[in-house]
Every structure is written in C-alpha cells, then in structure tokens.
Length: 388
Ligand SMILES: [Zn+2]
Image (cartoon, rainbow, N blue to C red; front, side, top):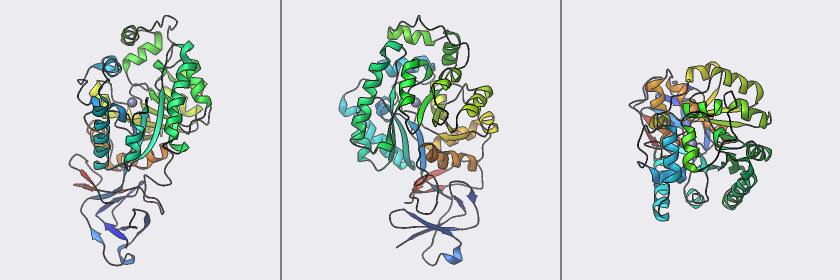
C-alpha cells in the first residue's frame, strides 16, 4: 500500500513545485516517485500547504539540553561560555530527561537528522533510543599546546565508546574553535581525516579581537579558567588564516556560525578547500548577543548554507523552522532558499544525501507538511507536521 500526497506546493529538496504533482512513498517512507496526477492512480491525499522533506539540524549539542533557560539571553559570548563551562553540572536523571525531551521536540518539529557535538559519552544511549539519524562530532578543545596529546587521547576514547553504538561513518573527532585549540591539537584532529570536520567559526566579536591581537573579553574567559595564555599574542589576522594551513585541501569542513566572517575570509577558504558547508545558527546568535552572519555576502560567494539550532543552553527551542523564520525576518531570503538550507544542504553536509534531504528515488527523507505555506513567501505563519 503506497502513500500518495499532493498539495499546492511541493519542495523536493531543490526546487519548489506548483504543478500539482503527487509524491508517492511506500509504507516505510521510502520515496517511490513524483508523478503527475493522471499517472498516480487512486487514493491521493490532497493537502493544503507545502510538502517537504524532513529537516536536517546540522549543529546541535544535545548534552546541554538541561541548560535550557539557565543562561540568560544577551550575556555576550564570554558570559555564555563561562556559564556553560561552570554551570553545566546537574544530576544524571535531569540530564537524561532533558535529552529525551529534546529528541522528542526535534522529532515533533520535523527534524530527521542531527549533526551533534558531543564532549561526553552521556548522549549516546539517548540518541540510539530515538529514531533520528545522528552524526556524532566528538569535540575536543585545549588551548595549551602541551596538553594536546592528552586531550586528543581523551576525545579518541569517547569516540571509541560511540563506535560501540554507531557505525563508523556516524562518529568522528572534531575541534571546538580556533580560540580554544592549540596548533598540535588541530593537526592531530585533521590528520585522522574525519569524514567532515566541524569548527565553530568566527562566532563573536570577542573571538575576533582575541585571535587578531590577544585582546578583548576572551581574556576574562581564560583568566576565570585559570589558564595562563601569556604565550599567545594573536595572529594578526582573522582566524581562518591560522587554521587553514593545518588542513588538507580535500578535507570537507562544516563551519558553524560565521557571524563575523568577512568576504576576504570566504575567498581565502573557497580558494583553498574543496568542500565547505556554512552552517548558520541565527537563533543562538540572537540569544547570546552575537551579530547575525552576512548572509547576502555568503550567497554572493556561492556558499552552500545549512542550518543548526545549536544547544538549548543558547536557544529557546530546537526547531529548524524557527531558524528559517528568524533568518527570514532579518535577511532577504525567500522560502525556497531557506528550505534548501533546511533539507538538502544539511544532508549533504552530513554526508547523507543518498537518503535524506530530498525526494530522490529510493531516499527515505521523512515527509513533512508545512501548513499555512503560501506562495514562495513568508514562513512566519507556517507550522510543521510529520506525514511519514
Ligand atoms: Zn555549537
């Protein structure tokens, strides 16, 4: 028994169709075909709104879900990081319960796949128990070069434990951010060739000042951590100039945030690297008090954009629809562009476009209905429900 759906709008992962076509899927959600009505036979369900593949959340930190509401908005980057570093302790049952709820929330909002940053093992059993696809970025940090080996071994041990639960393609060690990793640590991570390397890139003005000439608020963070960073005097340039030479050309990277990224940074990176995905997390940027990325500039460079919610420590909800709505309120983007970011581009970034992000034959991307969707217009009034 096949499911047959038709609606005034159908976004297939690449383009918005308005030809009244019919999406045919098997009982398990596998896509069979998109056909014209006269070829689809009987039992077509005619719906209102837009049919769309399941959303991909390319950047999340599930293990911080219990911190929802614990960090007040607009603390700035350093205030936020201090709160997360010093105030994340909570009883195990609270942490587990919050992660389960967060998985349910994402599922309810139409998310089918998640690129999730993990510092600890704690999220692995929760993820395995929910029907979402997970790419586990095992994140390492450590700004003091002498600690690089130890930090890398610790992260590798967490990755090994994740491997017991997930296939190899769904686990890789990755770095936190240029301002929190040393050169040898960055090299160790790059040299193990993860399928994709995720980097928190150019998220705040504080980070920019720190990387440029070791000034600004970020100094407070290292002081409060008790880490002597007297050896660091800045690199005199923006951070991509520092980490780019440590990677290999063919290493695909997922750059997250990009709030203070300049046109010259994009030129530099695109010239040197084969594959770059630019993940935007506007909800977290607004919550923390960081600038929103220059989306027009990124698009002018032909950048491949995808979307992430970041964590509930620094966002009000885990909803890719909400991220699209925020971007549309602040930037000049139409629904087709945003839906591409929310579906196919995110799937491509996580290396799962053979199954997710579009209605290609033999994919199983999840099927959503965006109710209240009109023309290629505003997503403000749209709500999402899962059809299959
Ligand atoms: Zn993050």
